[in-house]
Length: 436
Ligand SMILES: Cc1cc2nc3c(=O)[nH]c(=O)nc-3n(C[C@H](O)[C@H](O)[C@H](O)COP(=O)(O)O)c2cc1C
Ligand code: SF4
Image (cartoon, rainbow, N blue to C red; front, side, top):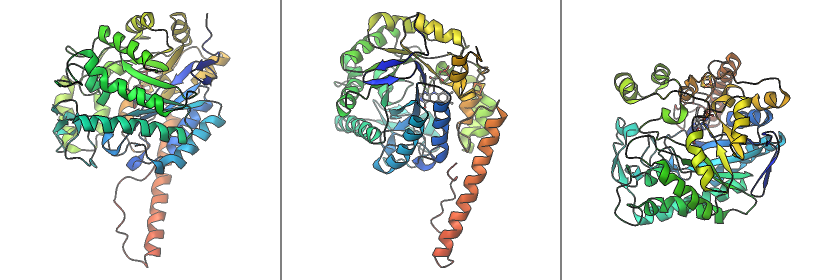
């Protein structure tokens, strides 16, 4: 049987083992910038033994952000991202970055366009209470421009020293909105049949592949199912997987779910409504969560390797490397994924709970993770200072210390600016939260 701790060659990249830290939004990019906290977060995960860590949900353009405080790819962030990739490499791991676009799912206070955009006219519930109620259908020119933005972002990722690039085709973001028959009601060459709905995603992957040298693998995070009636189903996603293989994708990460409709389909486990209400900063959204949350946010029971039954169908259909994801926590889970023929496994919450888990599994110190899956970390990613497992006191204390330090250095910077302005009031301060 394949050893999950054995090296694996993905395209031109050799990973020291077969375990990947999957993208889990860090909440550590205030105003879209890379913070020291983000660098330390990924350095710690790399030091904990994974083969590759993934920087989460980086938008390919400013309007592709769901939130204002989200990384978006641009030349200015290259030096800081270089510090991140260097820190990860120094710990012996590879670094990947997830590139995406929120499409019609936007609560970005700095939106440049009048409205978010997606495949078809849509309600944007996440932004509805702050005035971004509707999303506009994209024109063919906007589709072409966004495709270019993905390719340009991949080139920036390469400049920043990333070893791999992940394209987000799942979870109900832009490319997934195009793939899904429920959210794509277009009548042009980007809507209707599956091949039309998949056209945008396939063009993006092809352009990203072309933009990168062969030694940098392109991974695609895809939905096995959207998880609601009328959404993308397994039979279609198997075809999409074959097309992605033909277009040169190096690996698929198999996931599912749609953030605007069934967010906990992808996480599975408890629904942390109380914590989500507590961290919500916008009062109208807080109230909406309180009143409607219990009815509209469904929970889905946790099972180990919960996507395995669907993922097996993709395994039968393609020869390319596949990354099994979803509810993988224990050493036994890793072994089962290998037995089932998946080349790689990805873990999210188990590594948020304990970034050193892989090293502990490798030495035999541990056999199982202490992650329970309560999903409270899903709420914590919106708290100042970013994601942590609230069950681990050391993580909570470290975050609090970071926030305090950042506030103090923000205050010092304000004083310096005021002094260099001849003691005048500093009008450049936005009053927004400081960098953690
Ligand atoms: C706090 C948190 C943030 C997440 N953010 C992202 C994200 O930015 N992009 C993404 O594709 N998936 C995201 N996910 C989903 C994970 O990548 C993964 O699909 C999910 O947690 C299931 O894997 P697990 O059972 O190993 O945690 C997030 C998960 C968590 C817990
Ligand atoms: S909060 Fe901690 S224990 Fe709960 S799911 Fe997240 S990582 Fe696991």
